[in-house]
Every structure is written in C-alpha cells, then in structure tokens.
Image 1 (cartoon, rainbow, N blue to C red):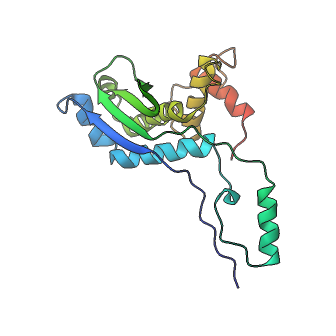
Image 2: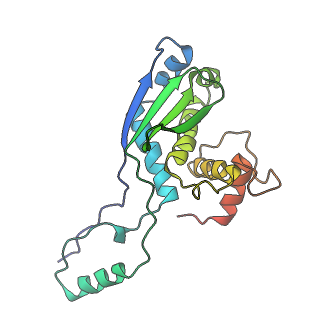
Image 3: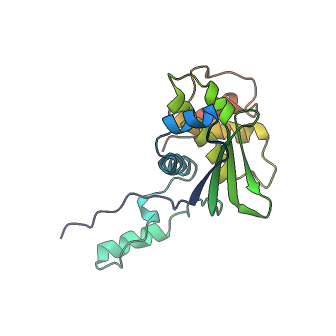
Amino acid sequence: MSPIPQPSPSHDLPKFHLQILDLSHPGTRKFFSHCGTPLKLLETSASAVLRWLYPLSASSIETPIATSATSLAERETADNQVPEAHHPSIRSVTLHVRSVDGVAYTQSIPLDSEHKEVHFSADYVHGIDSARIGDEIRGVIVHELVHVFQYDGKGTMPGGCIEGIADWVRAKEQLDPPHWRRGEGTRWDEGYQASASNAALALPDH
C-alpha cells in the first residue's frame, strides 16, 4: 500500500481583528484599495513570519497510529529528535489603521500580553508611492508581526537585534524596499537593515 501523504506543516494562527476609526482618511482608503482582503493579508503575513522564525518539519505533525515495523521505527526516530521551538502564545492580533506619527508599532494590550495590537499609520500609507504600495503595506505588516511572535530574551535582547530580525524576515519574503543596501552599518545590533544583513549571513535558509 502506498504511504499516506503527509500534510504540509503549518502553525496555528491567532484570531485577527481590524479596527478603523476614520474611513474617510485618504490613507485608509488607499490601504483598502491595495491590501486585498485584510484577513488574507494578516493570515498570509503571519504564516510567513512563523515559517521563518519557527520552522516546522513533517515530523512535527501528529501522524496516525503506526501499523507496521517500518512506521514504528520512523515514529521512534521522530520521537528522538530535538523538540522544535514554539512561538509565544498569542490569542489575538488587532490591526489598527489610523493617523499616527511614524510608520507602525506593535504593543500588547495593558492587561494581557497574549493579545497584541499593530498600529499602522494611515498618514504613512497615504504617502507611499503607488508603484510599490502593495509590497510596502505587506512589508510593514510582516515586520510588525515579527514583533508579535518573536522572543526578546526576557527584555535582554538589544533593540537593534529585535528590529534587525524583523527586517530579515521581511527581506526573506522579498519585501525589502529599494533603498535598502546590504552591508550597511558597522555593528550587528545596529538595527533594521544593518542587522538584517548580518542575520542573513548568520542564519541558514530553510
């Protein structure tokens, strides 16, 4: 009998919510015109983030009870493998598109760190060049979702390293903006694309 095909490994995703307070803002209208379906944007971006930060193998998926000596041996091999890393428990992510300084930021709600908020500046979206607005919207979302799911060494990781990992994931998804240059910066923890370049050298593809 042919072996049962194994499903592609995937992570469970949190609930996603969207909050828009000003539908008349030109950046909000531009966001909806170029983001596609907001839920699909968030699910696709989160799946990409989790795939790069916490890669899964087929052995991480629960398989049916073994029925032959071969499958038993395979299960014993899988049981002896080093456990894979698990991302922090996140129950929900709410995307806010609103008028705010800067580009975007991520935070936990005050009472529960398992519920995250991503605040995306509608003013920034309004100013994005129309030639690459779709990639820039997704690039920013991917960057911020890295902050949702990444660990920070219980507050000990340098901020530049945190930002660099987020931009490394963004670059792996081929969403890096044209002004980024590999090799810029003088320190591995300098932040953003400088740290992302160092991460690209240190971290293997998977």
